[in-house]
Length: 249
Image (cartoon, rainbow, N blue to C red; front, side, top):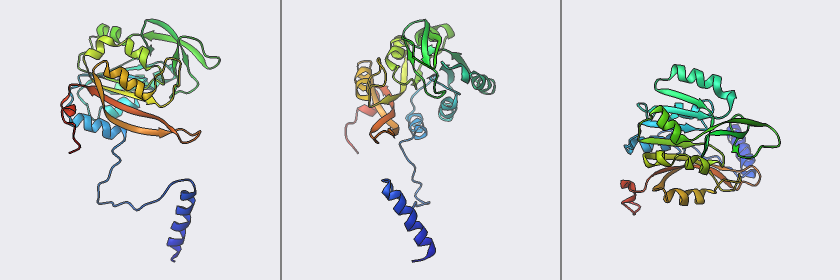
């Protein structure tokens, strides 16, 4: 056994003890992980799903919008983010990015103020009751009101990265949903908030609104026990041509 082979064998042994394996990559195969956000967006763009306005709810610093613009470059983008710590980056992003605006607020099913967990700049969740720590009171808006006030044009893409607060946001987006062609939701296998639904409950809820899943991406296991934790699901209109064919081939 060569020195290189011994080193590789040692490395593979260490990874296998942790449940992983190392396999050679065929550099000529063009193999790409199909279950990433980037690939899901690419396929939806290739399907020719019409999008005029993208509403990014839970936008953080605008990084998701930046990725989405690669595939829907002609759309107008409206970013909604509750945590004030992201405002400097959002301002810079708006200045350098055409057809882009943002609002510093949480989204929900009413207008006013709401409590927000600010312990994680890229996490956090809204709540009608205050958190015991790392709690901030922030404005809350209805997406329907913002769409009307800003004259945002349909058809829409709604993206929610909102950690269990999806239903109040969707309840505040009833009119917008009627003109939405694509929904992208981060969903969970566990009930992570009092108003949160598990992923299969979200699917049933949205089926009642006329949407069905067409993509799943960014699957994640939880650290606690490696059980399935979360993923992002892409939903499109139930009457789309993709659902007219029920076969595999």
